[in-house]
Length: 412
Image (cartoon, rainbow, N blue to C red; front, top):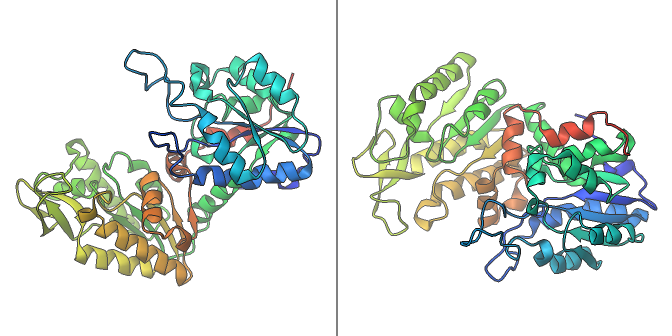
């Protein structure tokens, strides 16, 4: 897919309205605990400033209208982007101005007054219900903040929100484009989805088969191997007549699991399940643990990680792969007792990458895992877009990408 990016655009004297994904985690004192999303947007911002342009940044933070205070009101302080101003300034090396509303007269006055090299951050878009509704009037107001629209928020590209999709309608084709981060995400995803060097192995984990049905079906036409771990594996084992104790299961997906196994066989794809599991007598960091065959888990016990034989099997497949996609952990890696499988798979992916494989890690938990085990710089690409990456690999067209690629109505 050929993408029009900021690379070949001259921003001199232009105000660029950039949709970034600054939905970063904050602690109780409003300190940023992971600033990687802000860092991801820096190359695009710096390019525009270097050209002699000015920048207006817009983003959401959390879901303020859905997570109200006990009295039913919006917690404006908790979800305010003002907590990001200092860190963004420090990382950028430029003072960042802040507008305490995204479409107020004051905000428009501030964006209109920007001089070349200056940066303005607008307040949380999701303080307005019109943002998530994709409201055209709201999007048109946002468009007045910039001469040019840049979408650099891959993490929200699967949402047809006002700032990610609809706002693009108010810019001519020449004045809307992708940022570097967005382009990198799509380029790397396409490398896996459309031009994967074989053998191509997909590692899928997480809790539910239902979350991964579409991606499994899409990958059955592309991958040589699909490795399944995490809670979703036990639905497959139960479907095949195995005993899974109290392990997580989707009883309404048993028939589907059998169909996926059959489709894999028909297409010559190796669909590999974990032969053994670390089991626990309760879902608790202090639980008693043991090892069991994954299809013979005793009553009262549940599988919470893959065990040594499964780790060996999976690792061998990974080490013999040329392209690797990893989406979803192998177990409850947040608890030390159940992190062994996810850590081992992360190490196998890193080792395969060192041997020349191309590896893409996408999805919140997988990304958290490679960061936790200090392996993020040992894989080829770490995606910032959880839900967006998943939908892209399901074969869906993402609204945020389509909006830039489509012809537009000229800006009024």
